[in-house]
Length: 412
Ligand SMILES: Cc1ncc(COP(=O)(O)O)c(C=O)c1O
Image 1 (cartoon, rainbow, N blue to C red):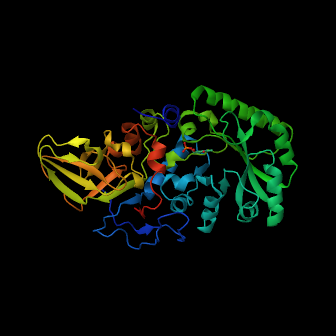
Image 2 (image 1 turned 120 degrees about the vertical axis):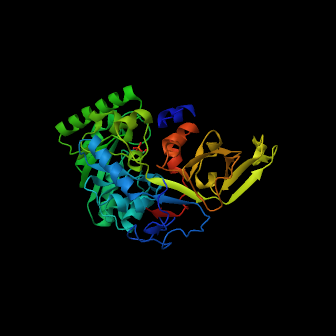
């Protein structure tokens, strides 16, 4: 079963290991100004048994090119919230920033916005989350674009600018039916007019879709009608943007002045992934990997892991991979997920525990301790993030965003 984010919420390669450099484990702990230089030096040693992530730079570049192509060359405001969907905030920003198609970055947390500046990112950064009065002046001083998402945001932004001694730049966040963040569109006109009277530079005006196809069109109508009326009254709105990855694929009329995708840049599909894959071949930009730490031959009748949910009906080889749900690998993987080792796929059995996953090898011993296992990645259709999400009835957003920020990251 394939679950889009919407239905999920409603219902419930053997690339080289030694990349050019290792990356810091967490975004905020990363003092490196460039992704090719890392804290861990030369990449994972060949006998490393801790799991790791490989971040595929060329996949990110390819995916940005595909988004650009799908949207007629619209500028891309790259959404890299939640540690760039698990891939690593500053590392991803450094890879994407040189691309002409990337107009800037959008995050939800003030700390992430500041971490980008700290890491030397120069392109515009939009903080989509609500800024506090305490953070406001520093955000303005670091040239973070603020979202005006409440009735008093514009006056608070003006105050923050005064304290920073610098003009504030902002995007107005409108709520056209999502009811999550933003100023409700039906009473936004006076707020837009009041903002226009303040010494704030409005660089953009945006909204988010519910991703319910019929209602998306109604939301877009509300947005464009309001924008037209506000402009008629003299308000300056900057670039209009609305489309996330779903809109990139399914709602061309929402591409407007700029698009705001996240997950597509990382190589996963937002909703109906079979249909979307027919439109464009995105490349998953992350691999979750670890080396086999144990190989054992079960006797007939032996059982595996917590709950003894697997029992060998005949002598069978099994192997242990030191990755578990605490690393971000879904515990639902026992419901049919497979893991790639060499050119073979092995089914997950028993249960996924916090730090270990067990696979069935079969009647022949076809692998060894130290062999590299890929649990998520582009190297086989079965371990594609969307396939893992579909097999395990989880959201592809969770497959990526739950990747533990403490996992070492290596560029390939
Ligand atoms: C306001 C907003 N815009 C854009 C995005 C990017 O969405 P997606 O990853 O589906 O492209 C998100 C992420 O959920 C978001 O919250």
